[in-house]
Image 1 (cartoon, one colour):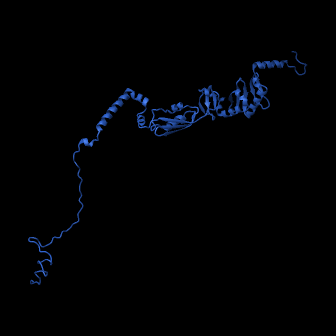
Image 2 (image 1 turned 180 degrees about the vertical axis):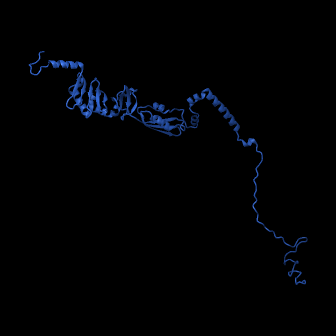
Length: 327
């Protein structure tokens, strides 16, 4: 113990300054233990470096690019030459548009057309009106445009056009049925039951239709057909019906006789005409016109010869109050 009361040697056995049981330090080794101090690690901001490694040009360009560019150049040159020379239009007229050609190659060509609802029109007429031909393809075909073309045809009332992939077109038509013929200003038209003009009279298959004549007669065709039905067997002798002042009909008979019908109750006048024709053969007389507009009588207009003969006959008839005329 030193003078200050401190013990110079350890109280425990062993190497001085060490706890008991601990090994003594080797020569040259410090007896003081180094205790590591751990400081918090700060994040390190690293800057990305660009790679300046040169990549060969052949590796950066996709393969076959050169071949494609060469083919595109020659294709564009050839196309330009076709356009200048006029061959492109000829190719389009023969094979169709380029897009349609490609669509047909992959299986979307127009190979089948189904048409239903036609009676007056033929299949060829429908295809022609719709502009449908084998050069078209289904993806680039406009169903709405074909429908509009068909409905612009007077004989077509409505049309439905559907595309059935991969290669079929379905067309359903509702036609206007030819109902009568209408003569106006020297021209003859085929009309429907509602008076719509279907077309000019060009087809002889419509020649047997009822014929109406005059302004607005097409709108009154249904009433004229009703008169024909009321005529019964006499119908075959009626050639046409002429609408007068938009109110009443005058029948033109096959033998040239005009039959004037009243505005009201015309079917009853037709029945009277049929009875007189059957019983008295009135239509076989020398008459130019028969007027049924009066309910209690029929007024006949005779031919010139018949009128002269009748006048002569009247002269020869005995006058009232005399014994008679000499013959």
